[in-house]
Each structure stands twice: as C-alpha cells, then as structure tokens.
Length: 481
Image (tube, rainbow, N blue to C red; front, side, top):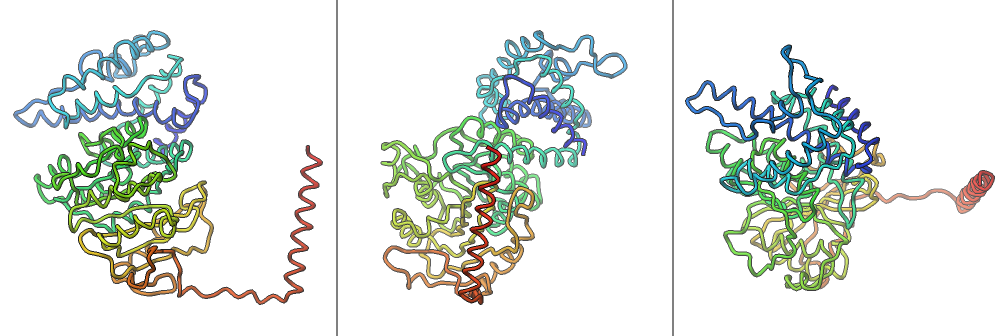
C-alpha cells in the first residue's frame, strides 16, 4: 500500500508540473528518478555483501552523483538534511548541467556494451529532465526517497505498480496499432510456449518489454546453478524497440525485474533486410505483439519477399525468418490477419514453413479501450501445418477497465491446449480443406446456436420501444444544449 500511495502522490505533483502534460511524461520522469533510487539501493546492497568476500565492491555512481549526496543527503541524526538538500533552481541546475551529462558519459567510458554502466549511459543519452520547477522536482525526490528496494518483496511490489503505470502509459499513448498487452495474457502465452534455460527469447517489437520480463520470471524458476543464472542474465533475451520512450522504459523495466544489463536495442526491426539474417542470428523462442495498421517507407517494404504496407504482415515474415528450426512462437495479432485477402500470401508462407498448432481467439475488450479483436498464433518452425486447434474465449461478462482479463479466464484454454481436446469452445480443422486463400477465420462449429424464440409481433414491439427510448434521450440532450 505504501508504494501505491507514494506513486499516486507523485502523479498528483506531476499534474501541477508545467513540463509534464501526459501520462507518458509522468512515467518518463518518475522512471529516471525511481531508477536512480533503485540503483543506489542496489549498489548499497552489493557493497554490504562484498564485505564478506575478498573482492570489495566498486560503486558505479560516486561522489556528488550518488543519490545520498545530491537527492537525499543526511544530517548527523540520519535524517534528510533539509538545510543542505538542493531544491529550486539550484536543484535544476545540478540535474541539467552536471548529473545528466555525467550519467550519459557512461556510454563512452563503459568497458563493454553488456554492462550496467553502459545501460545507464544509454538510458540517460535518450532522456531529458522535463521538470521546470525545482520545487516540484524536490517534492517528487522526497516521495521516492521514502521507498526501499533492499528486499525481493519490496522490489516485487514496486514492479507490480510500475507495470500498472506502464499500462496507463500504453493506453494513453497508443498509436499505429500499438497497445499495452495485458500481463495475464502474456503470462498465459509464456506458459504455453514454455521457454527453457539454454534457449534464446526474442521480441522484435518489445514496447515496454512485458514479454521479456514475464519470460525472465518464468525461466528464473528453472534456475538450478550459477551457470543457469549467468545464461539468463547474459545469453537469453533480446529485444528491439523503434521508439525512444518505450525503449527507455523497456530497459529500466528489465533492470527492475532483475536483468542487470538487458539486451534491448533501439532501432527499426523492419528496416533490416531479411536476406541478411543467418543461422547465428536465429532465436529459439519469439514472443511478441507487433504493431498493426502502421506504415513503412517503400524502401523498407522492399526488405520482404512478400510486399505489403501493413506492419504486422511484415513482422510475421520477420518472425518466420528469425526462428530456428523447431523454434516456437506465441504471437498476438489482429484477427483480420486470418482472413484478409492482402495477408493470404503471408498466411500461406506461415502454414507451409511452420506448424500453426493453436489459435486462441480473444474477445474484444482484452485491450482496454481499444475495441479491437485479436488472436494469438502459436507455431513451431520446421514442418508444414496439417491440423490447427482453435480455442474461442467466450466469457459471461464484458471486459473493461473495472473488470479486465485475468488468468482464471484463460485456465480452461491452458488445460485443453495440452491435449487439443474438443469442447463447446474448442475445435480443430484440417489445413488440407482450406482454399487457395488459406482463410483461417474463426468459425466455431460447437457453439450452440442462439435461437430467438420471440414472435414477429414481439420483435416489432421491442424495436418500437427502443425507438421511443432513443427519442426521449435525444429530447433530453436537446434541452441541455
């Protein structure tokens, strides 16, 4: 509860900050401060633990750049030194002219790109301080300074709330078919794909790195040795993100979840020519929700064998190319991919080169406020598809902000998917029965037909009642205008 009330109080301060006007600004500015406090606690913990070893820990941030020096200096009583703590214009000047340049500098001085030092440099090379008021900045710092990240429970509580802030950011800032993917859905996809230690996990449109964070959590439970832990930290995950803010958030989100130097690359995945991908580049597992409805320049479209202006269809070709033989994927995509004529060639390629063994049909409302229908494709590369098992998620309620999707909603799907059982909500089709356009539309043959038993007279009365209600409503609105 402490973390939640603190985050809410910070949002309240940011609403009065002229330099921050949207949820995107709120999370960006909260994130860099939260990150520096988290980093200070992390380094303090490392320092304490090193006292019991022969190798003393060397801090990354030193001198006046430590959190406890510029943000939260203490007096002799161990309390915040309000007399000497920077505030107002002095605080802004230090942050803008000294702190940010110092932190950016790690990008050029770090020993290697797979170090935490380099990631700090990358993050602050992309960020800028948007606070116009040093007094508002001081208030936010004081709130964040009350948080502690010394225990696993504290870090877990913080990451849960941080994910909620990311969700609000995603829903506030969506464009070009980009939506925040609900964590219950991601956890279910990860569970079905079942990534194992020693495999590589890739998301080429990673957004805030939700898939990679959940895959890390899932795979962390498989750790049995120091070697396993090292593999998870250094050799397992790769994310790519085109846009600045999601890239920053993705990097910090993975660090918060426990990946010390996440391999998140800033760049446009679709600008990479497919012909340049070799075996050493391919991955064992791909988990993604690629943006749809976007557009790319003509020269980018030329990178693909099947020319298309739809970003999602380009990403599907990228997925197929990037998977190793026997590699597995769980992909969220708009349901129109299943039947749209423009996607027929991509569908055919997918069915010929991969075994699309499962399609999960999701109801509208899964993506809060979007009203978009999506499906999840589960496939394995290396052999053509012969049979597809469908599961249609039929819920007895409408999903929304106050009643979102949860993991219990997907429990039956997870259970039936293992054996591909038929039920009222699940069925299978033979790919040999498909036409030339490879239409994969969701057509549930087991769903009971809803019969309207009303007489024609009753139906006409219901229509008349609706028309009367509409007329009354319009009249009320006209009175108000």
